[in-house]
Image 1 (spheres, helix red, strand yellow):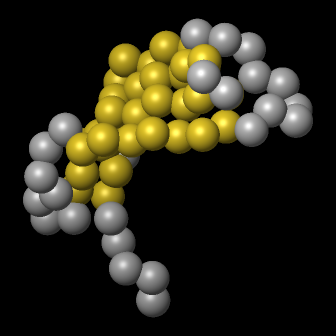
Image 2 (cartoon, rainbow, N blue to C red):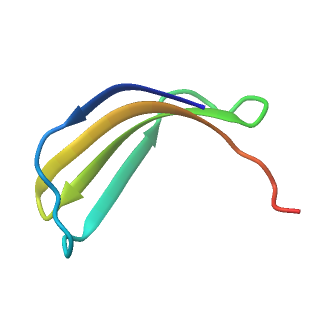
Length: 59
């Protein structure tokens, strides 16, 4: 739904394995969650962002 404060720290190339770490910033309300996430390649942070997502059930 929304992405803020995105910072790309390093270049990512094909073949790199991305590991995502995401933490909730506030409790989930009405199916909407606010999170801060980091993407890692090995031990290096390659990207970080704050984002808002809507959680829906598969039908």
